[in-house]
Picture 1: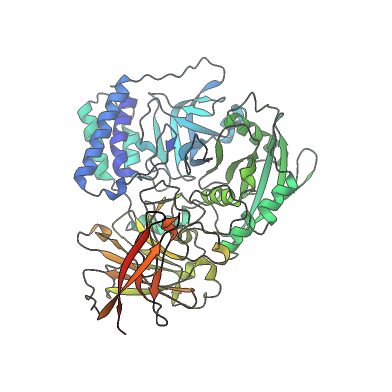
Picture 2: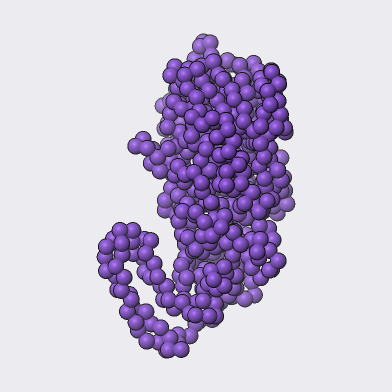
Length: 625
């Protein structure tokens, strides 16, 4: 068994323990984002079974596969001792017949160093391809976008396809200032000889024992997490928008329209980020002149590539050409002179809608997507190190309470982000609370919650909060509670309007990259129970939307340690019957009986309505008083 095969087998076993279920990492590149609830399977026997299945699959595939990389083709070049920075590239596709709504792909790409880029015709980013199509290669399981460095002893770069092939015999490793022991262990075993299948299995087991998954209780990581997010979510960001034209295709919107739709409109990238951050993050058009002829730049740069889209339908070809021409006009786009760089690409390169590099400055938009605030906010969110927002049991872009879910083609949209993203961005630090319900002396804790649109009016009221983070110190997940108030800067939120949302961040520390999953959306009187909280058997936490006061401004939420809470006494009551006939959208039909005064508590609310145009009867017992 050759050395590279040995490495890949160790990698396959490791990834089940090491990588997030929401972002499987692989040297091969593309991973379709689908719903995966493996993070919910906490039992060791289930985890071990998955590991063994991955191991057996890898063994079979690797023994039967062949590397097909021809070095004789003129567009492929051998390079040695290559180091490049890793980034996640997240691409979302238009919801057409070919792609369902929210279809998204993540892949790892590598930024070539300047000398290597110049040697290969200005090529900037390459997809990483290993000789085997095995998902979950551990060499990237601990990689962090914009921070980790990939080192390979030998690689083949395909300029035409923008790919970097890693041969079987090449040594590879991923490092950054917080490198995992498991990464180092696997990388250091590459190139050793005299190994057997048993040694491979033992090596994987040793690596698993040596490097547990990072958790929220990891003091070393927590103390350094402020340095991990290289993208800026505070201050003023200078943005350059590059409008790309080919010989036979150009972006539909003219420069003045792009400037308006990105920087000036009442609902656009600049105005909505300023609104959601309450002015803590602003985006302004880059001001300068071109290097070739001194033309003034006011946020928009027009570039012409000497290509036809009809004969070069592969996006990477147009992308590389546009990047090269733009740098000839304004200099190094990687320099600190530009905080954000947005490429508006001409039509004709496929069904992709937009993509961005995570924890980086670059984003790309397919023609008119450049003018949609929903696309702008989502992709720049990735630049700011935000992951996608999903919903429990559905796709990982299905949380439409905020911009990091999938939003359809929309122009003016007044909306912000979900509670996990609001916490990560740091815009509401005065209005967030960290709370471990198992460590608190009181079994019941009450929070008065406001929506993001009410931040300014309640900033001096310390009794009110915007995000509650439920800490699970021994887990890689945390829960976040927010009030999705449909008002002001958030008045166009697409779903769960005026409800309390409970979001679980699947992996990554609070200020790190990590996908989130919306687990519940509560109306007044409804509750959601988290069982085995912090992986403690029998310890359940109940989150209840207890009431609403102050004309909708204040949502009253209780968080209860069920085991230690006193049992509520049931007051004498009389039965009343509520009848409701649903319309053609049954899930949008709701009602609640709330008290007039007090905390606006609920004494009855609707069940789940599933069938359209159907009569539902509900019995509610209302207290005599």
